[in-house]
Length: 355
Image 1 (tube, rainbow, N blue to C red):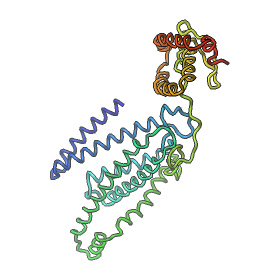
Image 2 (image 1 turned 135 degrees about the vertical axis):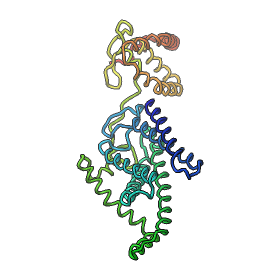
Image 3 (image 1 turned 90 degrees about the horizontal axis):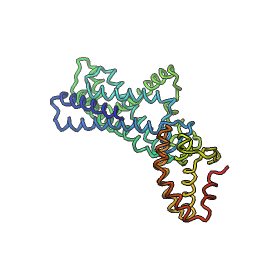
Image 4 (image 1 turned 120 degrees about the horizontal axis):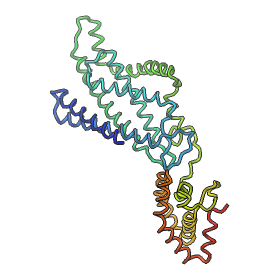
C-alpha cells in the first residue's frame, strides 16, 4: 500500500504539470476540474487493485470469508479483460492528447476501443449488482468503471461536437468528396456505422488473444466462471471455519515448557492440542452461554472479530509464549468465576474438547 501511495503522488505531480502546460487557451478552472477528475481516476485504480487483492479467490478455492471474498472476474480469463481495458484507456489518452489531429484510422480505432470499454464497463457494473456472500466489495469495485464511463462518454460527446463543426467547415474541390463530407457531417447514422466497425475490430483482437491461450468467449467467461456475483454460474466449496480459539494456536505453537500442553482434544471433528489455559477459557465461555445467551453472542462476535486476526499473527513460538503470559490474568479471572458459579468446576474444565 505504501508503494501504491507513493506512485499516486508521483503520477498526480506529473499529471498536474502536464495539465498546467497543455492547452494554453483553456481556462484554469477547466484545467483544475480535469486534474481533479484524473486524480480521482487514479485513486479509483488503486481502490480497484486493493479490492481485487482482498477478493481474489476463484470459485474453486475454499476460503475463510474473514480473509476476503470471491473475485468477480475469473483469473483464467483476466488477460482478455486486461487487454481491452488497456486499449480502451489508450484510446482515451490518444483522443485527450491529440483529438482531431490523430490520423484518420487511429482516430476511428481510438473511438472503437473506447466504445468497447464502455460495453465492458456496463457489463462489469451489472456483475456487481449482486453479491451473495458476506463480503460486500461491489461498491468499491464499481468506482473505476463508473469513472471510466463518465470520462469516455464526456470525451466522445466533445469529439462528436468538434468533428461536426470541422466537417461542416471543410470543403473539397472534388464534388464527390465534398458531397461525401457533407453527408457524413449531417448523417444521423454515423454513430451506428462506428458501432458496426466495433464488431470486426473486436473479432480481430479476440483472434489474437486466442494465440495466447485465451478462449474465443473469454470475455463472457471472465464474468460467468465466478461465484457469488450476478453473472456467476459456478458454486464454491464450503467456507473454512474461522471461529476457532486463538488459544488453540498458542497451545500448539508455544514452547512446551511455557504453554504446558496437556493432551489431545477434538474440535469440529479435528484433533487439536489443548492446555489448561485453553480449557479454562472454553469452560468460561460455555458458562456464559448457559447463563446469558445474549451476552455470549455479543462476546462471541467480538472474539471472532479480534481473536481470529490475532491468531493469524501468532506464527512463532516466541509470540505464542507472549500471548500465553498476557492471558494469565484473564485465565485466573475465568477460573475464579468458574469456582464461584459451578458446583463442579474442574469437571466442567476437563470435559472441554473431550475425545
